[in-house]
Image (cartoon, rainbow, N blue to C red):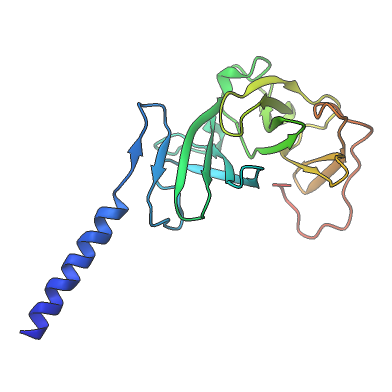
Length: 221
């Protein structure tokens, strides 16, 4: 009898957990969703994502900027979009939906794809979204670091152009120091470069020297 009671309790507990795991709320087809309240690992399971860049902004939320692969997955060259996710407790996550895709990049490769590891920075009321994207069909030699801006952390980004004077490398990272000076890094093929940005966050302030003494660096600055 005791075994039967414990068996029923176990089944009820399993059902409750399964019900919580399946709960996803969508907002009018806009892509904004509340992800599984149990925060599984990985916490993003409803779409393919990669290349996360995480930041805590002034509202206290953690925002994750990620590339979005197509379904079914067919290789990283077809990655074409970016999504933003956020949380205020590391348990309950929201998918804010798509913020940018290749067709919205005026100078971008006409075939699309190749929207790889991004980053985001904040300065003086504006969010700056940095993303690598080639400008030509010959993608390997035409990488540029594009910049899109918004007054919101997870919506309404508009492409402003790309940063001129950078080598055709990928995976940008932007660091804003305590004194307000911003630095940008990118790399690939075992090389990492870094330099200062001007106050407008969209132009280099000097050169991009190679970062020395990095051990086993490949990409993803």
